[in-house]
Image 1: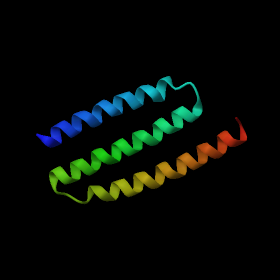
Image 2: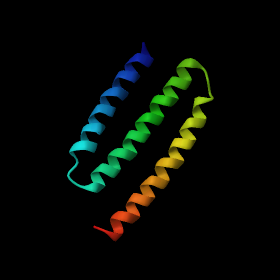
Image 3: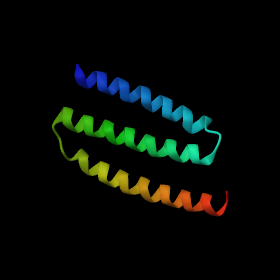
Length: 83
């Protein structure tokens, strides 16, 4: 029951963040929304790993974090050059 409530709350936050991603007036808003989507996805994967008892999913979070970090740095540098 608790895992279901957590999944519902994560889904609601995912929808709200996706709305900000598509609606965001500036590129910085969109970058923050992408980062938040990655954090919400990581939280969902952790919740799934705990629910199923399979820690192999936790490796996916490390890879996702690295990819999102480098993507954010690249987009930030691009925005710094072209405001």
